Length: 473
Image 1 (tube, rainbow, N blue to C red):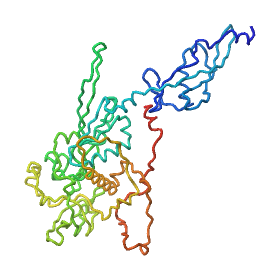
Image 2 (cartoon, helix red, strand yellow; image 1 turned 90 degrees about the vertical axis):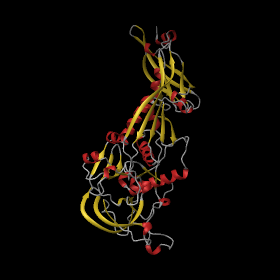
Image 3 (cartoon, helix red, strand yellow; image 1 turned 60 degrees about the horizontal axis):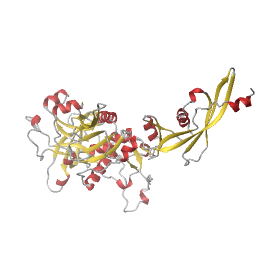
Image 4 (tube, rainbow, N blue to C red; image 1 turned 90 degrees about the horizontal axis):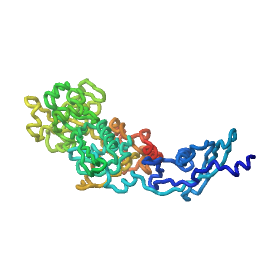
């Protein structure tokens, strides 16, 4: 038989379907790869071509030589693939044939999008809590979550009075998030599970899991009175110390000797003490004189200062003398925030470690800079999409706390080094002005103010491939 007669009598594509149905989720743009996997692929991409070829039954009986897409309208709900196959029909006779398979795209919502639409549908929840009167810790935690994309698998995030609730579709995602919290904050957690349904025939159980994560109620700038045994084991001469940084460890310093140490989460929860004073009790002082004492440690220098409460100036002549770790920052005439222990009222149990010891009158915490030009900031921070929960806090108080958090970022370069700052929309970088050309109502910028430089900022851009990468993972 000649070639034309063989082609007329033999069809090597017999048994191979010429039309195949595939399923596509319009919300996330993924294709269903049975039974449960969803694939992300662009139109006419190699990934989509591989997916379509694998969906054709009967190709194992022939040898696939070539495959490629035939262009169709993007909204036609049709994909056409041109295939070239070969098969041996007689002894030493191989026949090659070209044919087209049409794929009909049907809509079907994937499981993840279904859960996102029904916001009450979740499998695991991480309840992050901190028993404090402010949200400073969660503002910083929010920035760490955004930087490391730790919220990528969350179904929903809800605001609650003492923290945040993170909802996940799978238990493994919640466990990964708990590990992230342990890496960035001193926490302890416990788990519980609730039986939702039970199939007696297949002996399967459906549970919802809850992870209760408690963050240590200790924040930056808090004043601690450590138990004597713990203070001695950490090398402190006296138990009164300051917290200068919080990560997975509590970084503390003795402001009178510059001795530093770190406390891990297990050490803290074993003792379970609370802060003697928090940042809400800080008092403003005016520095009258500074005498360096010589010792230095990292970014601190020990000095003896003469100071008075700012509200007492011109009212009385009360003057205090104190040692401080801010000797390299303070100059006569500066303002500083500190704890007024001379007139403070504390519980006797909290001050028990200081019994038979001399109590200082003042513990300075930080320098106060004269200018905070919030309206001139060229930077900003991103925020999470958080659903409002019950018992919502005052918007005015939250905004005030958030502004104070941004002030701390601006003043402390080391504090903001672990998060991402973005360029503020429509921000204009101020140019240096000639003092002779300045108007009377314009104030000169304080050159000592530790502002954020343009080099520290990134453009606020949306990564279009982020969702695809998360889906593949």
